[in-house]
Image (cartoon, rainbow over all chains, first blue to last red; front, side):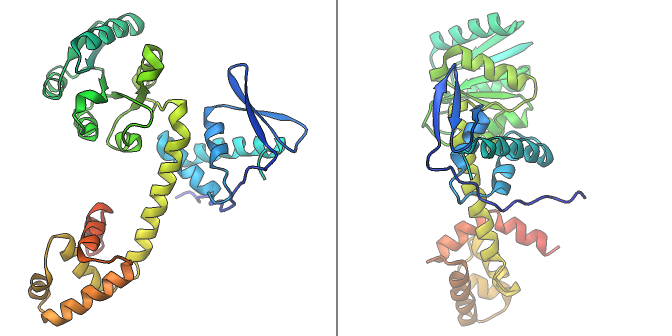
Length: 91
Length: 218
């Protein structure tokens, strides 16, 4: 049995972050120097960044909804959140 | 490839069939206008895919999802934004959901994804579905933690309540006095933080606690 990583941190949108439509996609910008393009899954995750939902809950939900294994969901969610942190749209 | 297209309107079903034939390169697209036709056609022809509008389901979309899943027929349910419980459709076995507002392009995109074995969720529904799933999991986790408070005897009582037993029947089944049964019921209601036996029984059934307890007894 593989060890399951449980991330109980609760990302939160920074209050200054804004998302706007551009070129058929969503671009979010915040306190960081760069903007981040949000695909549909990333946008849904960003909406879940309410300061109460844990990363583990997001990973479980993505894994169940898309019927993918938890390790893949962990990588996908982790990568999307890292991009958002770098752009300063979540903290 | 054969596809089954279901919509209560003959005109719409035929239009859907024509579009799917052209866009998916189907060998055959059958059309059905009601639930009985759908179930019969799916059982007899075992199509590669069924594309069914929720209006055909007469309010029990999840039953159609379950029926198609039992027949091993991949299903795209065509729904409306804000209508019904989309999470329940996916949990009941729908491979994907398409929104009627997205037109034939959205239906074809969903059909292609499901034919490839992937789940398909329209972008506009994604955030809401993830949120609903998280809330559902929290409720489930809370229920499990509440049940974990019960003593073995109270678990037995809850199982009997879930099976529809009243206080007297519980007393008989457990060979205890009616007063003792009443005490167990009172305590388990407090521990489960519910106000009535009906709520406790519903909790035992809807949360799958009855089967879980039976399994735990093995």
